[in-house]
Image 1: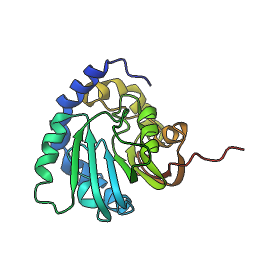
Image 2: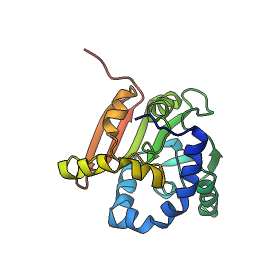
Image 3: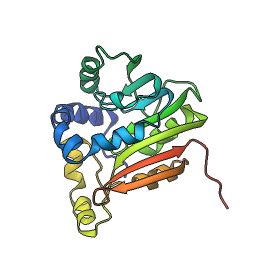
Length: 213
């Protein structure tokens, strides 16, 4: 679904919602088990890691096998909090304000590209995913922790009916289909898992385009 907002409006909406997102950490990370999902998935990230839509840095502690981390986000509010969090961390972390759909990095720059709970918030998620593919090394990994439309019919219908309210509240398209987005962007899904009444997805993808018959 193409947003009806201008890019500037989209950014303002997310900056406005950023503090509420930060304050909802306990319910998201503990109650919904997102922290456990981050820990399991992002342990697979190695080498120079790019975190697209890094927010306020929730993924950084779980990147235990990274040698260097670059985080990019378009929200100045999120990045301000992220800079507070990384103080004292031993891992080299480079934070940059930027657009996920126009990454300012050369092709094949990173060993691993990750993103968590972000494709629902990208202005154009297909372009952002293609950018992740572009900057990832051919033998690298793209690791995604996402949420989307439940495969429980009653809940999926509810999400469909209230998606516009969720966008207005926090810029979240909560009825997206993450695995379909990844396939449509031309990435190859190597491994995927769906959990918590069909809402959360962990996806290991390859930047290589899947073979077509």
